Length: 371
Ligand SMILES: Cc1cc2nc3c(=O)[nH]c(=O)nc-3n(C[C@H](O)[C@H](O)[C@H](O)COP(=O)(O)OP(=O)(O)OC[C@H]3O[C@@H](n4cnc5c(N)ncnc54)[C@H](O)[C@@H]3O)c2cc1C
Image (cartoon, rainbow, N blue to C red):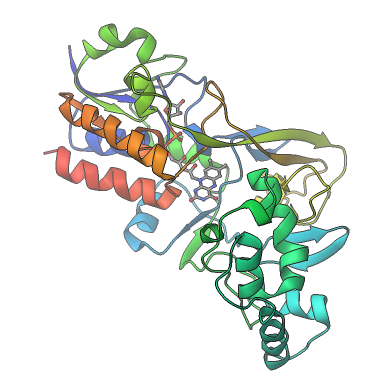
């Protein structure tokens, strides 16, 4: 028997597509080259803690349809992202808000904070020439020096004076005590981790792991009428036009024999000297409790390092510059000429998608495709 669809990739795009196709009565086979489902939102349980293996993932959306969709597959907790900045041992609340300004300058009222920022912004007269000048012109020198400079330099591996000003267009400043990072209507973490949520999406669907589509293409193509491919678009075409670039992150995970390392899920290290950009303490995504509501005695932390990406590394963030945009456009033309294949998701479309956006994109594609 031939399947209606072969879905390559068991990440969010592939799982949503497969779920909808099955619901519409289609036969579906899902494959993934990794040993696990869930793609980059994969969580693995270590000592009762759901560890976000490919980087911390916080679900947030203003899209009610997507929220109603995901909550069919998991219960979400009330986690709110409120990161902390550590600058040489001084702690600041993020994003920039009244707690931050009080700590920075001792100001108490919003008027005092606004006046302080205004006074410091004046340092830059004329068009900002680089990222440093741009940041100072938006929020002043103190915030720039303590909370932006080192973090940005580590992320880009370059001095802020050598980075173009357009990288930072806006730096939101809140003259309130609101430290909820995402201004989203709906936010949370699936109770029990993302892997369980994706497993529910894939319930009743045949999944083959450790199966690389490109290494077995002819054989796998023969199994289905149509392919949904969520792997890298350039790899599909054998990198024939060149390699699309990514920005990479390296994670160093550590299991600690203590209940509380930093008291928050995310702490950004905003000085230049500390080599990591931030530390994630995974248990705080679920309030430090195990699935039965008991306090967890240990903790798992991940130090994140910004690193140069080279071919063969895990692709994380697409680089949205002119060169890569033009190369993607060429691959897109090749993709459009292919028959019986849909390219989707962050790698298939070479696009940074938040989770809600990738789910919305997959649902749109299903509406168009599955009759
Ligand atoms: C570090 C980081 C942090 C993030 N944090 C957030 C966040 O806090 N909130 C948020 O909303 N979004 C976040 N995102 C975005 C989120 O990860 C994506 O929206 C989501 O993972 C995209 O799903 P996808 O299915 O398109 O891709 P993926 O999850 O990458 O799935 C693609 C799958 O295809 C498989 N595959 C590739 N090639 C082949 C092949 N040849 N054969 C078989 N299988 C193949 C891969 O193994 C993978 O499992 C973050 C992204 C990163 C990189």
